[in-house]
Amino acid sequence: MEPHPLGIGIGLRLPHYDHILSEKPDVSWFEIISENFMVEGGRPLAILDRIIEQYQVVQHGVGLYPGNADGLDFDHLKRLKKLIQRTNTPWISDHLCWGSVDGTFSHDLLPMPYTTEAAKRIAANLRVAQDYLEIPLAVENVSSCAAFNADEMSEWEFLTEVVDLAEVGILLDVNNIYVSSINHGFDPMEYVDFIQPGRVMQIHIAGHSKYDRFIIDTHDHPVIDPVWKLYARAIERCGPIPTLLEWDAHIPSFEEVHNEALKASAYWDAEYLKTTLNRPQHAVPC
Amino acid sequence: MPSLAETQRRFFGALQRPFRGTGRRSTEMPASDKPHDPAFLKTADQLLRPSPTLIPAECLELYHRQYWFRLLDSLEEDFPGLIRLIGKDTFWKITEDYLLTHPSRSYTLRHLGRLMPRFVEKHLTDQPISHRAKSIAAIEWTMMECFEAANGITL
Image 1 (cartoon, rainbow over the protein chains, first blue to last red):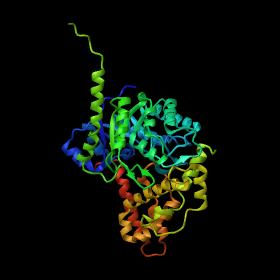
Image 2 (image 1 turned 90 degrees about the vertical axis):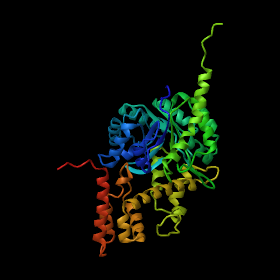
Image 3 (image 1 turned 45 degrees about the horizontal axis):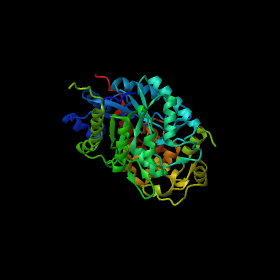
Image 4 (image 1 turned 120 degrees about the vertical axis):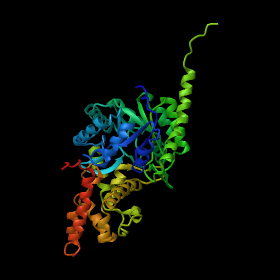
């Protein structure tokens, strides 16, 4: 799987709509939350259409719930496919999680037990979704603060098994890896080093909130240094992967969010440079 | 070990139990010192293992409070007029009952308040304000419907 040529993007969020439409800032791409635009009309789609005219948009979902034991919601898939046809997104992503039972919704990204049964179930659902939507699908590792007695493998082994079984890509969220590493006490670099580079289609970076005994993935702060270190390692291993900064609460100005995202370009440029320098040169005749 | 389906039913069942614990005290919900019921604690111990810093019940509690925070915030945002009319204390009491009776049945939180107009009227039965409360809740629900409706036909 070759990296997509998109660069560093940011999430399209309501407080920035006016700025983006009036100032037309130079941004590689915007990520949208699919469920915010799965409507019949009105302002959400009117804004989206204006954004699409000027920018590449990539869809990121929070409601597919591929880990649901009772399978996928095909009404949801139909709405998703309709939106895909509108946005021309090059791929879509959602989460390695479950979130509803018998048609009642948690509206949360709930953690999977890392068992073979769960891996097979979520992989089967992802495969069906990707086939139905007819577009590459990437699944994102979520942050968690609960682990199951039933776990049979590590999170990174589970993620790898799922994407291999489903033949889908990974949206690698390095902030989520860091958050979970603190909450569960594992080495986050071991996680990043285990991931197959060829599977990674996109990377998420974000900030979080630290409490006395746990961390919550709140997307309301700048990215911290340990997360940048994980990001640097991921780029080193995977190459220049399209990267997205998430900032979803206490959202500052557009410039502040964009500048935070662009810090990632330092790691990209270094990787690009190294790739270029290491490329075999043609012999120069004396 | 329970199956995946059984694990999810029990985990989600615990999230839907009445809002207890320290999370409740950080909201405007009517105060309650009731602890989590034994079934909540049993589910936590049977399904989850302790983290380096949290016991299983505390891990489950984090998801429980996030579930309630998310739904309460959504209804507070959707019904500002209703809150002004009936007051915060009454609104939060009704909202707690509403969520225990009508959990979300839609992929989007925008639809969470669909049954609120009828519910609030029923809850305030015999009070003079009940019809007005239903009306304003209905207007606010209709505004949500307009927000995501297809554009109307041009006359």
